[in-house]
Length: 149
Image (cartoon, rainbow, N blue to C red; front, top):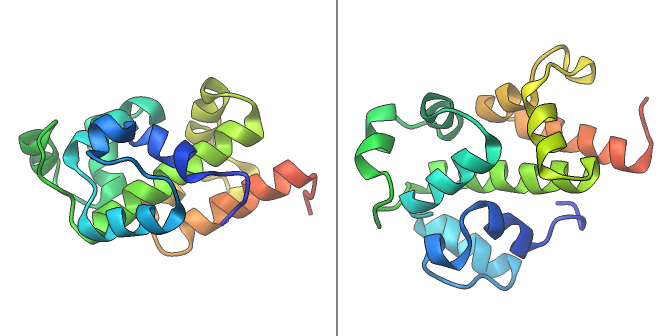
């Protein structure tokens, strides 16, 4: 994980203490929260910050759109797999925001096909799971450090 992204930056995109129901001060607490399940209330914050639709969020998290709609804003929790995907999305958004100099440029970049990603959008690779999110992170780190080869 990049040292460019703090637990506070990640939790900001998950709605902070208000949506998460707890203050997260370090990576271990963030790992526990992900394992226990991120509250559905955080999903709405992440959706807004990523500037995506509810259908896109369902795909990103690997959950049914009806499940998202039904639990919107509730205290119910995502399962650990969906929580991990939400965490990764928030982490990559925080990294993109840092590397690209702001939320709006990060949102635009995540939605645009990237040549270095084989013409795919970063959001599509994030939703694919597997090594997709790692490819996005590696590209962002190469951009940050000026390594384009």
